[in-house]
Amino acid sequence: MSEHTARISWRHSEGDFPKGRFSRRHTWSFDGGLTVPASASPAVVPAPLSDPEAIDPEEAFVASIASCHMLTFLFVAYRKEFEVASYEDEAVGSMSKNEKGIPWVSSVALHPRVEFAGDNRPAPEELEAMHRAAHEQCFISNSVLTEVTVRPT
Image 1 (tube, rainbow, N blue to C red):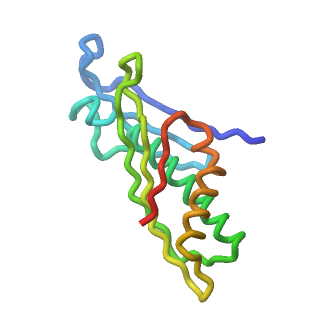
Image 2: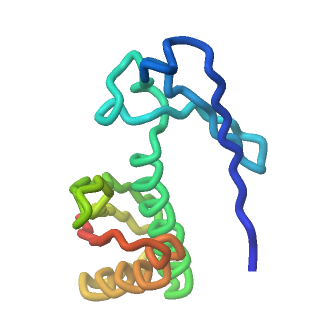
């Protein structure tokens, strides 16, 4: 169907690599030309070896799930002829250890807040059904083992 690419670049520039004291700062570059600073999470690798201002893989994973849900929800709303005025989400990913003792993002809770424009607005049960449809159709949610819950506010 399609391919999606990202270039990840890191170069040793400071610190003592053999002793594990080296910077985890790196960049993510995408096919559209955008490059963003990335790093290990400060929860995993303390600063200054990580960069708290950069995107870390765990928060990018959570953002990817939340963004996919939103984009799918907007499509579902459009198809049902509901005009969305705004959409915000405070997504939260939680880490735990799997059966092998390896940390993983075991759950992601989405908390979307949707405002509608115009006279045609969904009833609460329609809104729930739209979020359920968005979750079931989201490419990213269908690609991961992590439990994803949607709790509209």
